[in-house]
Length: 311
Image (cartoon, rainbow, N blue to C red; front, side, top):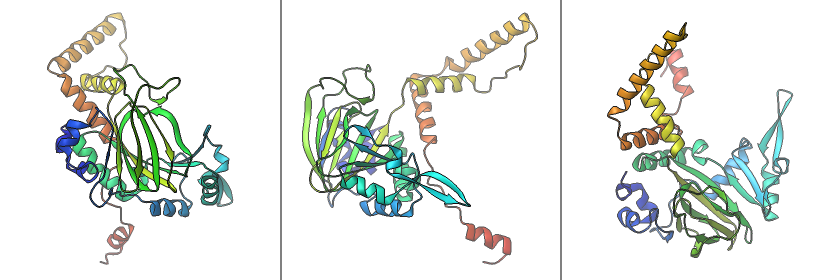
């Protein structure tokens, strides 16, 4: 993968080659694209999604200064066919909580918003890494999340309002964990305010925290995921076991040892010509395959026409 050739990035960071050389996995930065940060998802889309009443957990979460809020404070039950089903996002409750300083998180926008899914499918193909989308709406003065690390490179597209960010030095090696950072943070490397139309890049593993500042802050986080050792191990298993014939039940010790011998021989031949890059590429393809596909919408109208024979 060559970041410099990921042309879709240009709408957010300008010249992809310059971004790759100066920022990618090295240091955070703020970018001001011409015409503002082009986002497939807007604050109006947030309103529309909540207004449907169909968003369900785990796609919505509300957090306060101490962490996630109780689900019943922002979800409600809906009755269908005389049966009550819990876990539906309640627009009125959510609006009231935001008014009292809570942050709204909408998860995996790419799974349920068509334009976002389509754009990120293109970007994921260019980067050869899965890209996911999360939307945050934070009132002024509220923390979106405590100091934490993300196991992803993040592009923050500021949709409205502004947010004050503090970003700290990234890990020196692979010995780190995603999630909340306890104790003294590492050295601060960037303190900035990101305003509507601007884009912030946070490299993978760099601790960061943010506070809503001007007006109601809304941003879309595009998280660029990388494979890890677990992905590599699963790919190694799949590649080494490909086309392996496995006898269901060896009947005695000799048959069991013969089956083990055959398996080891098969694995040895399967991995003999396998390179480290082959393994990484397979793991990345596997992660990409799990993304929602933009595909072709299913048209029930067309299906009906086929059945009736009418155009």
